[in-house]
Image (cartoon, rainbow, N blue to C red; front, side, top):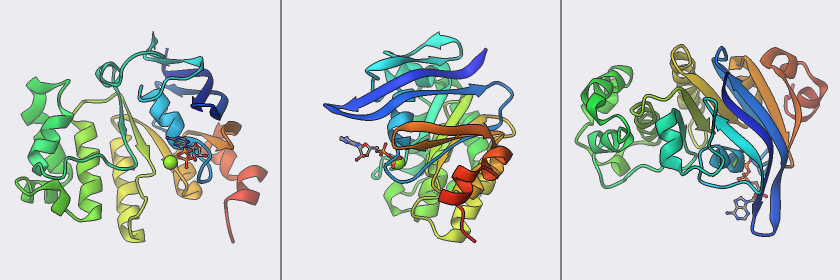
Length: 234
Ligand SMILES: Nc1ncnc2c1ncn2[C@@H]1O[C@H](COP(=O)(O)OP(=O)(O)O)[C@@H](O)[C@H]1O
Ligand SMILES: [Mg+2]
């Protein structure tokens, strides 16, 4: 059984089609699957479709063998697919701890245990547990968004450009955190930092203009002409 199985997705915003016949798979033995491509390729649209925020006009999405094409987002979270969105979607006026609580709505009974696990991973969040989310630095907000995603005990955790708007050193820390998380949870990583994302990936997909152009192991993609010519410099 695949963790995620996507078959033939077409997605529109009104009349405007942005995804064409997109198929992909996340397998149980994948630790990181990366989806790379330029700005505007449709990466966020794809992730929103997988997480039930958008409904495709054609095609099918399965999570853990269950058809969730028309399912609401909460059901998809409950099944084990959680995303850390590009905007991070924190509750700015709520404390760090309350934001973590919001992430645990499907696993309330395990709140304290999971919170302590998140605090262990990100000690700075424990130091700031009573501080409002909007007063955290960009890097700390990204940690909180990741921590909140972990509170739902995902089987698959998807990241939409997690290094976006972070200084290089912080971005590097985020990639290291993602690598650590991928020891326990399968990660779907959406990135414009193509070399870093494919370096971490067991398998990857290149999305361009709303279509999957190439797929393969991370290694194969890094050495493919499509990636070398379009995305890697130097
Ligand atoms: N809410 C929306 N309404 C209309 N068009 C949108 C909307 N969101 C994104 N788009 C368009 O869909 C295309 C893909 O966008 P997006 O999925 O955000 O790409 P990426 O995440 O790869 O940068 C772009 O052309 C973008 O302008
Ligand atoms: Mg995007």
